Image 1 (cartoon, rainbow, N blue to C red):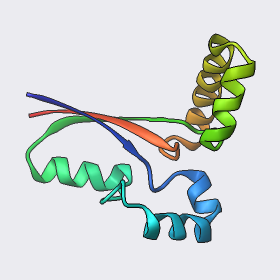
Image 2: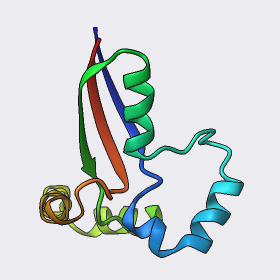
Image 3: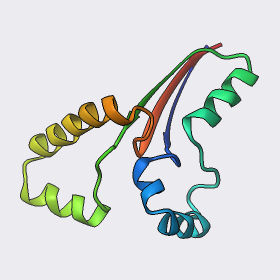
Image 4: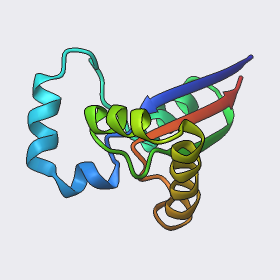
Length: 108
């Protein structure tokens, strides 16, 4: 079988930059019971006999939700999605696994 995961990345570059805020957020976050980095997921999958484990990081540059909502109201969605995609491609080549989210796929 195949597994696909989409998770928030605790190793995101901006979470490391704002460590104090990130720790406060983590301690007060009731929506996310667990916090992972791609390396944690790789170990979990390998320990459960998955192979062909692949990762792709996303969301390298994001704004707080209320700002993104405002931007989507005043700017066409196609333009903002294009800008987010361009930043993901650019920063993905530099920071690799440091995006705000990541997709993982594996086979068992």
